[in-house]
Image 1 (spheres, one colour):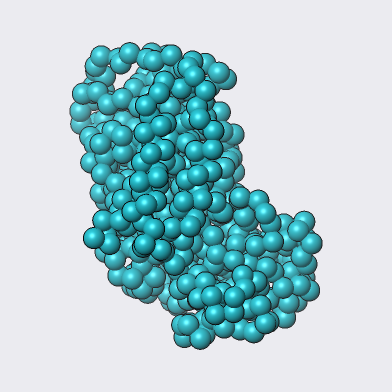
Image 2: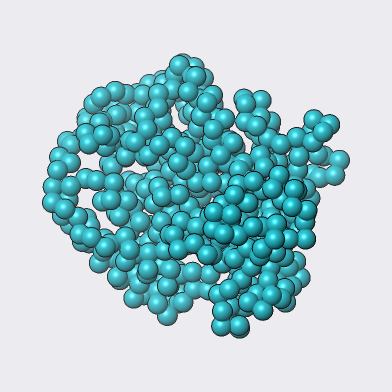
Length: 488
């Protein structure tokens, strides 16, 4: 073993970073980042953070109700109450730590409106809030003497012992082995299980797969959110998002005929929750026999659009679209995961000492559909909660012996079969998209199980391709098994 720590956090998005800085200085922490430190779904988050800061025009009950409505009342109420009531203090805390949030001329934080919200309560940094949060928190965490950070550190194996965990990491072509009493998985989403996603390249569900293989309870993994307005002209697998906030500022959805249609499917129109708008687009696509859809915000002043949405404006210009003059081509694609590693209100999984926070965790906050801008809030509240619970246990029980270190298999081996990841993406994209195809669930599940058998039956060389292929195979299998069982 290279070194042992009190806590190892896997992932350096908003949840991983905020967890790390929430520990007291006498708790030793190792932060593992699969790639570069700033590559995460958190960094791609545009809209902002939803929280009740203006108690004159807004209140906790309204935010809770909006969250429940969006989640089709399948949310865990106590988890939503914790999110809404504790979240504002965390938002103010990160602002005090140096995270730059937009302010009004009077010094108050700017608050915008997004789909599904009944009040202007989303604080933001222009249209790149996630990047501002990750950059700000990372700068602070890097000053902490009790926190070590390893970038380009690929977790490829986890072992549970009586006293904690052993983690095997691949870095610069070599194996590293670390031990800890407690582990927080903050590994993000599963976007790369789909052909098209707004997620970053690292979103392969690794933490969920490792937790599953350790025996942790996984819940509602089939609750996948498809964002209605991803930029549709790009052929890349990773599609950049046209934020909810664009519709919040007045953008309208147009079909291939240049006509508004969202109100034909839901009275809330463009400001209905994401799943409702995505469903409307797909149904309109079937009606018109076209996948050509657009967002139009050209009626707003050009200077306002460039100031309010600088990143979106710039990315669209790179694709030949000027949002001040042109309609923005959009179409739904995979965006977020509401399910994941099941955790309690302390962010602890069903395995003693193992915690999960952020998108990889199932807190019950989102129900069947996430309300816009609740994700970064959830990452903050529940990662801090994990750190607080672990600290209480360290104070009460002390540092426990880890137990016998497992034998480590060599990282060398035969070359893994090619094409597995592409096969899985095609399967999920076809069988389980916005309007699922139940008649394909059974056959799709069997195909993924065959791929799993192939990947896990040989001693292949340990590479990022192998680890990620195994992860998305496990995730796809769980999703299809859930929906398959649901049909029986």
